[in-house]
Image (cartoon, rainbow, N blue to C red; front, side, top):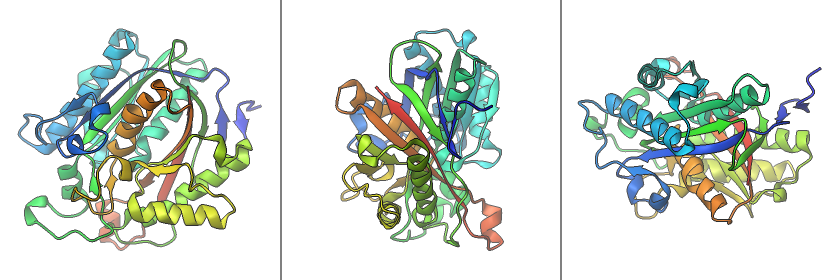
Length: 336
């Protein structure tokens, strides 16, 4: 019998994994944002000294992972699994970084929900007794994502008001079966929700229904009231998606207005930086949560948070064939 299964979609960790180390690396635009002081490394350029943006993304994903391992105080040789993903075709940033790190690798793709999905999977592996240490990481890059999903930046295509700015960065953490630090206590796996949005320049609207659905499932499964959490953090819905998320939750009888925020609205100053409807990308929830939010917990300003990292599960091929955009939202609870 699945004794750790709570309701339809939630798992409660009997032996909650401990976050013993984190690493965050961001680009220059993110380094000019309001959370810059809570990131480990701010890059001076978008390529990290490499010839292409894709190679640069791979390099700072490796750097974030190495920082997390160093800060955990353990040797890389005793890490049992490396769970990672990114936005590029065949998750090449993650798989090539795994080649460099030489840790047993589980590549995952959840689009921008990857950090929560990877953390949930790592937590299940540790709580199940299959590992003592799991490294989780993900990355995204403004130039590589634009080139793959929309238009090469060299074309200087005018962005729509609903467009979001892909965060250049990488976030990583080390989960352990014992130690000191914040604990991952619950995980709620999302369902794919698709309400027919086709515009790849309006991903917030495509993902908001999935985020709301996951919130409702989490509340139903756990019996937790939204006010239980100091912060209900959505992944990267941006301005448009965040408004829709609050409306959808309110329609279902949940008011999240008092303690909800969105990583895509936090990482940039949307009034002074040209980022459209806010930030997006795998790195968006990863660096905000693994960097700023966990440091706020260390500072005693937050005690219990619910992260619902959201992902738009489209590809260039599906968009070109006129497909709609499926959305997903995976949730984890982190407690100090």
